Amino acid sequence: MLVFPNAKLNLGLYITERRPDGFHNLESVFLPLPWTDALEILPAEPGHATSIALTGRPIPGDPATNLCVRAYELLQADFPQLPSVQIYLHKIVPIGAGLGGGSADAAFALKATNELFGLNISAAGLEECARRLGSDCAFFIQNKPVLAVERGDVFQEINLNLSGTGCVVVYPNLHISTPEAFAGITPRQPAHGLREALAQPLGTWRNTVRNDFELSLAPRHPVLAAIKQQLYAAGAAYASLSGSGSAVYGLWAAGVPAAMPWPAEYTVWQGVL
Ligand SMILES: C[C@@](CO)(OP(=O)(O)O)[C@H](O)COP(=O)(O)OP(=O)(O)OC[C@H]1O[C@@H](n2ccc(N)nc2=O)[C@H](O)[C@@H]1O
Ligand SMILES: Nc1ncnc2c1ncn2[C@@H]1O[C@H](COP(=O)(O)OP(=O)(O)O)[C@@H](O)[C@H]1O
Image (cartoon, rainbow, N blue to C red; front, side):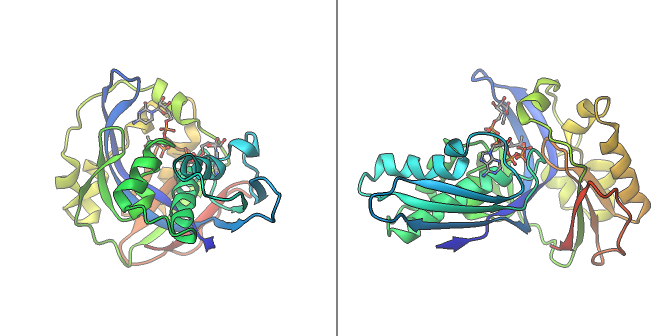
């Protein structure tokens, strides 16, 4: 079975509290972004163990601990009848970018396994498995815009229509680790409620919708503010860091802007939401 795990963007991101379990409570709108990897799961040849073949962007770490393999093994623990599989992952979405690419691969591996082998796990059951693989993994099960709270794994409905909005996502070839980004954060309550701020026109978000990671990452990574400034200079109505970075995106109300000059080592996605 072939699936295309997509990335996500964060619209606003407030880290409100440190939790007793070491994680943080947050508030953020997660939005599916149609920038995808390609993932295939097939039953393995008889006598072969589960394996993964990786192409495209190199993924740090041992392939045996790739989130796709971990997702499959998690289901195998509950469904021992599941056979060994051959997993192919062609990686396109940048890594350590705040785009949730690894979590998307894991969530799509859960969904594909469920369908391929007719396991009949409900969406809630798949979300429960996904939470064990990563905080933002559960979002990719239903894969629709939501207001995420608590660890980023509890979702509230949100009415948000951005269809037709132009989007440019710029990855400056800089891997930012999520735990390190959290280490620089002092939790605080947001000045503006996110749901209320996002209900206002796109042009107002610049003054009301923030990503708390921007402030703490700015001194170490001046490139992030420079990209944001370039997106605003090119006419973006709103620009922000996504997640814990390092990807920075801009939004245009009236479709995609003219191509912008970026350094050759950057990866840029441009399209309509
Ligand atoms: C904070 C977000 C916002 O979108 O960052 P990005 O990964 O997108 O950049 C995500 O929710 C991240 O989700 P995910 O990347 O799955 O995080 P996890 O693997 O669960 O956690 C990695 C590490 O980040 C920290 N962490 C993560 C989530 C959270 N709510 N509080 C935390 O403190 C913890 O130190 C944890 O060990
Ligand atoms: N399939 C995968 N794709 C990307 N990263 C993966 C994958 N499997 C495991 N990882 C590990 O997860 C880490 C975080 O990846 P990613 O989800 O892209 O981060 P972020 O959400 O911050 O953009 C990487 O450093 C990588 O070692």
